[in-house]
Length: 154
Image 1 (cartoon, helix red, strand yellow):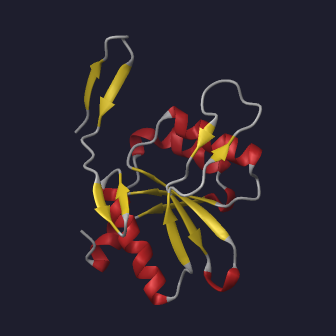
Image 2: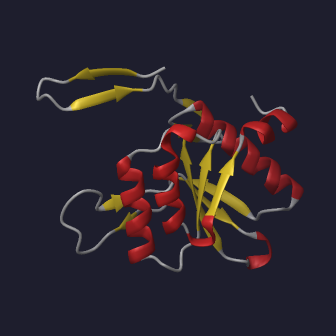
């Protein structure tokens, strides 16, 4: 459930009640991120990916003067057999700034494959997800709720 309020300077803030969790030597910002790390660790153990790191590489959008000018993807994932890397962005809730991040990633780092990871499809924000899909290389959006259930990741 979302709680909204205002700070002293009247900037709207949102509290999504995320609970930070520590595991694998990282402090994850939410349970969803920690669960996705469990999933990636499962894939490493199965040999389906080469490895992963959490928030390990910042992307700077040189020449941008407003909005998002720096972006740190949630996960850097190594593909098996030296197949390169992908960046995975975890979102429980997509906002306008997320579309800006994806647009600028495509503009400044067009060779970098991005995967957008969500728990469930959100029909209320279908237009926003369509805009994000336009800017994700490989056009991949993963929905993880059923995968977490199948693997028993809680």
